[in-house]
Image (tube, rainbow over the protein chains, first blue to last red):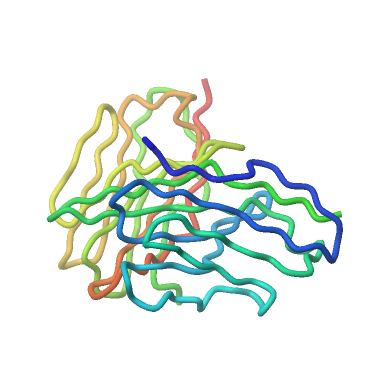
Length: 115
Length: 109
């Protein structure tokens, strides 16, 4: 597609339920990032994938969070046993380096509300 | 001390003014990004720089690698430029991005 696609755009769930958020990056982009943003706050890094290298999971806030990227393309962020503090907009970005320049594109985000 | 520092944190200016937002970093980088986020909106990449200067419309971004400093300038500012402007640097050896805290810009008509 032309941009980074995220789904669902909005998700309301009950505390304790599991959720899956999907990111479909731009074709050919090597790196894929997951961030979250709480209302009025900056970006909080969660995880990033770079090619076939092991992902950098250093930003995942707890073991309830996991992510995978299949076939170097689509990524899924899974949150198990959701808590109210997980409520945020989850943003995916993909990046391609081309010589001295590059492309960094963000998706529109998945807004998660945990009741 | 944060590895990427932006200044000012908040900036309010009148329409038409020349705006400068600064980004300083303390790590080795291979590239620096400037991004924009409108209130309630998505994040849009404005520039990626590894040296020199880039211009797009009324936006100009410069970087001085030796001084580890970049600036984003907006000429003839307009209320629609009101947004948070974020600087992010890409490390030398990987794709990790280190983010500044953002500069909230308000342009008053």
